[in-house]
Image (cartoon, rainbow, N blue to C red; front, side, top):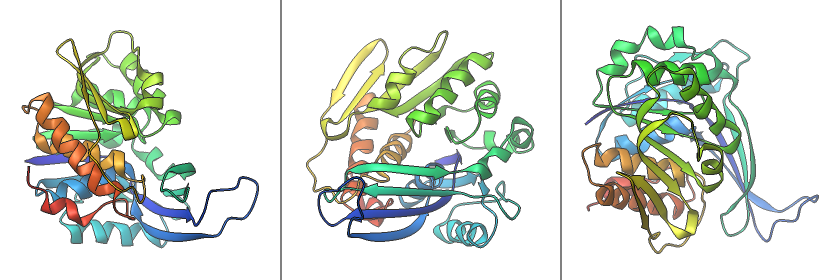
Length: 285
């Protein structure tokens, strides 16, 4: 399946505390630096699953942008429609995990993605619509997301990214004319922001509820799927892998099949110290 992923690509700096995290104090920890970003992570997972992936993004300027872009090509992603920003733009995500791998907090500097305007996307629209499905994260502006909702001719999956950015999807629907897209993925906190979007017509709503699993709204029904047993090493990237699995199943897959793929990919991710687990390429369902 050909998948176009539109979203962030950045440097991930993940610090995991050696013991229970103590606020207001210096905590002994281990630090990992890797290439990340919600869009890039989703694309990476899909490439490991065997899909033909194109990543549409603006890589940050300076030292890291060209290196991340080269790594994406080495993984097998196409970056023809991507761009490397001018010096001084950033794409960083810094997270702190407790000793059990649960996120304590994080900060993101994603100003490079501000260049992904409707005009910027319009120049890449033919390439976007050449895919079988399209995925976009909420690192783009509300205006850019509204443009995608109105002009994307393929099933469109949107990822809320964070509570701070989830509101962009709500605003995008308000700005759009169609107000309709295929699927929305969020976690429980993001879902509170997105629970009521006036006029929105979304075929499937996937809500990750952490250790409790996955909830899905589709065809006027509510579904609940338990999380798979696992040993959590880091939750960073778990949601990205979840959506990658859902997308990999395809828009014609049943709710049950898409949930099965999503939860299996999420388990691979959280059992790995890295945001993307190479083990995903070995999944057989």
